[in-house]
Length: 162
Image (cartoon, rainbow, N blue to C red; front, side, top):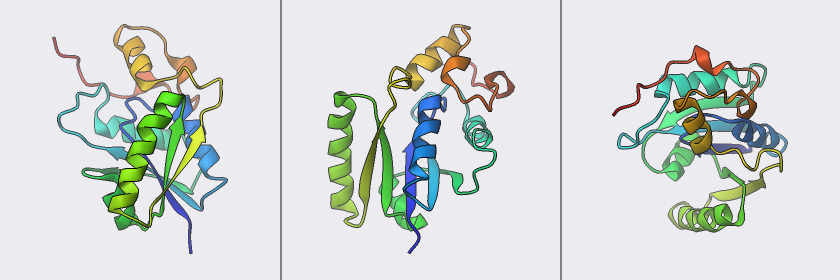
């Protein structure tokens, strides 16, 4: 049986930390599906099509990594894709407390799902999409926090509202 894992998030934007977690997951799973959650009430800096392109462009030679989008519960996507594993990155104990609660709820909804936590490498621990988004919104160069395969200036952004 193929070991399929889903790595889900908003990925606004997709960072070096996200990329590292996905690449490390390849050592554990046959296929990693990076799933961009769509929440119409959440304001994002990058439109969905740009986030998809950024993620695809971050893995130019990784056929075992695919990108999809979804609405609804992550475990519903897992069931549709035949994934029995969720991959989550942890930067801190606070992340663990939050993710553990979600993992337990997911297991109650879909008993076949297992959540695998990968601890973020120390050099990526301070990287958060929220911080990177703020840097970009204020015109700062955030390339040190983003995959080297992409130039963020090449991707459309949503215009900030006042």
